[in-house]
Image (tube, rainbow, N blue to C red):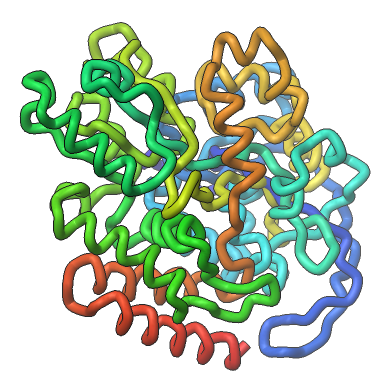
Length: 436
């Protein structure tokens, strides 16, 4: 984590998120109805961009482009921890103290409702951003009660990375579409001499936001729901149990290695890149890192991506990505709004694809033949996004994700069976919803 001096209006944090909205009347936390006053986007000068640690090194390249063109309105990158839960907590602390240290925030797409409901971010003018050119599911993540509070800077969809060379040698002609097929393919591959000591599959299973994502994907991919469109919990169902059982049983039978219970994104990426995994559930950022031919990847040129598998056919990713939002307590908001336009532009996304292959938000970028040739994962990624299921969009998201992580982890580590974990989760989520 890079230390940055705390000064008025000179902190920035890097990722690619944003906030939208012109909110008329909306319910404030605690049930009181309030009207969000139209913010005044005034003031020019230095600002900050606040985001999680930049694993690709691309954020500073982007900021350097801006700073070269705007020497009197420079953006400083404030890097937060890699853990999304820690990022969210630090942003909330800044908002609660009404500090101007953070200006433009890179928000996980599921944080919009919480930050908007608490008025930690400003509603944004929709006519400043080319939202109609973006994929609709991505745009919706920036809205709260009809207003725009965050602007999509990048999206994300989970994909199945797999070893093309090993599947071919085992006589497998296509990647698995179901969990059963994946386990059967693993059994064949692991009989190969060159697959000795390899593990079958991993995702992100440490007790953090990644576990919520993987749990939700398992439930959705088995035909279940975590919450319905109105936000009511729906986890105590046979479908949800089949999804959680896939994870629990996979740890038990060795499909998922035991040490994967500690995996975050980078742990799994390093394992796949080192040739220790046949399959891995990951985001698109991993693709160029694994494809590097500088000796850092043992599987360069020997892998591809496919849709996530599910119970009876292709599964459903959780919808990921980051939006940029404007801190309500920030200064120099005129500069901030200009920077957000720059950060979420199609031109910049073309530039960043080469160094930080998060999912683009613009539909046109998925259709460009030159880009598809250069980045062959794009068609699979677009399909992942269009069929993705959002995580619960609630303004007390922190409480919801903590409950999901606690119960899913308990089931995977054997302290509860799946049925009891889901029953307890349903009860907790109902109580949390009633308390809103």
